[in-house]
Each structure stands twice: as C-alpha cells, then as structure tokens.
Amino acid sequence: MSVTRRALALVLSALVLGATAPAAWADQLADIKAARKIRIAVAMGIPRFAFVDAALQPTGSDVETARMIAKDLGVALDLVQITNAARVPTIQTRKADILVASLAVTPERKKVIDFTVPYATLNIIVAGAKGVAVKGYPDIVGKRIGVTRATVNDMLVTQNAKGAEIVRFEDDATLITAAVSGQVDLVSTQEAVVAVMNEKRPDRPFEVKFVQSELNLGIALPQGEDALKSWLNEWVKTNVANGRLTTMFRKFHERDLPADLTSRN
Image (cartoon, rainbow, N blue to C red; front, side, top):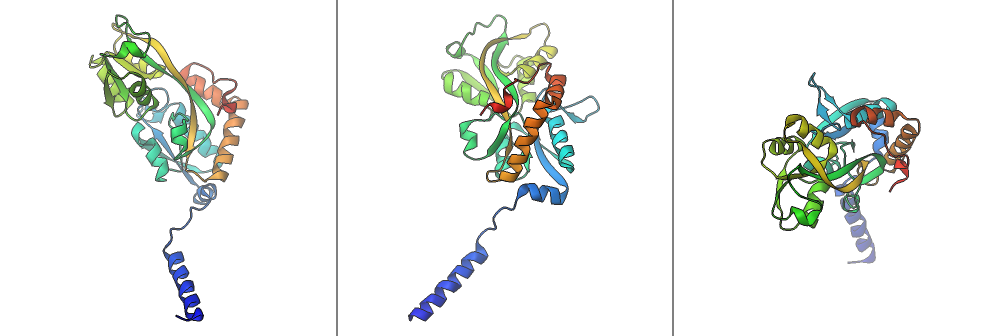
C-alpha cells in the first residue's frame, strides 16, 4: 500500500471510530437549567429523612432538602423515589441528576460517584432490648442482628462482627417490622429508626448499646460534573451558614447540624 493510500485509510478509520464512539456527557447543570427540571433521587422509607406523611405525601429532611435545591435553582422537581440499595447505581447510571438520600461519604463510594461537602450527619448505632448485654462488636457474635442491605451499617457489622448471624433487609421499613415482631435480637441502624421501632413496641423498647460511627452525608452526583458540584457545594455552605438547612433539619431530627459540618471531608 502506498503512503498516500495508507494515510487515506488511517483517516477513514479515524472517521469511523469517531462516528461510533459514545458522546461525552454534556454539562449537567446546563442541561438541568435548559430542561427546567431536576431529577433528585431520594431513598424512601427512612424515618425522619424520607417517609410518607399522614396525607400520603413524601416528606422528611432529605425530601425537603431536595425541594429547597429545586426551588433555588428555579426549576421543577422530579422526585425519584428509590430504595437504599439503589442509591449508588442510580447515580452511576444517571437515572437521576443528583441524590439526596442519607448517603454517607466513604472512600469506596468516592471511587465510582462524586459527593458535595456534607449537608447532614447521622450516627450509626447498635441497639437492642434492655436485657441483651452488648458493649461492642465481640458481643454480637452468636446473636441475630438486623441491618438494611447496602448501607454503611451492613458493611461495619460484616467487617467487625464475624460469627454473628446477619439478617439483611431491603429497606428500613422491613427492618423496623422485623425488630418489632422479634425476628432479630439486635439492629444496626440510626437513632431515628430506633425511635420509630420504640413507638411500635413501647413495652419492649430498644436502647442504644454502642455508637459505631458518626457519618457525614453528602449529596451524590456523577463524576466529572464540576459545574454542578460547584453550584451544590456553594448552596450547601450558604444554607448552613444562613441557618436554613439547620432549621429544617432540626424540625425533623430535633438536633442541630454540627458547626463544622461543611469543612469536613
């Protein structure tokens, strides 16, 4: 093949590859503004963060945070209701623009999705009935402990309580039902979930045995969306500083957000 023919073949090959290569993602913030709608994923069934009220309407601190973001962006809100286990995949596959779903910022998750500065926190705890003697992970061995699948709770118990019988549930609602009906001895969850359990079993309340971790919760978004991340970071910082996020969070959780929240990694 002559030099001229070889060069022509290379050009044609490049054109073919260019035609078949997947298009790069556009600026998602610009796309949201152009569509005048933002898709925000929220994991429903999490007490105080995302649940259905007496009028069968979604509410909770995560739901209200999503509504605040949409309003301040000047766009309509498309609330994408998902399960706990679907949180990371929903952002990876771009089935939502962002996710506000009590998702803890962890090194493992940061490998596949991006996070804003923290917008809220929660404590991960092990709880059980008063007569169950547990002070740490070694005491869980030989007991049935319930967790919600694909959560930090699940990971911590799996890593630190080898030998325990771990019973995994798809969401907090089914975990609550299992605990109330006596299917598990212990639960690894958050304080808000335990409060709901105790409302349903006041004669046998669960008590906190030990705190596993304080988690920083970030708004999740696809990697590479720098403009959207920058806008969200500024929004969180502004609304923590002016008290809007803290006031709303206190309404559902009866506690304030930490003063150093947005400076945490």
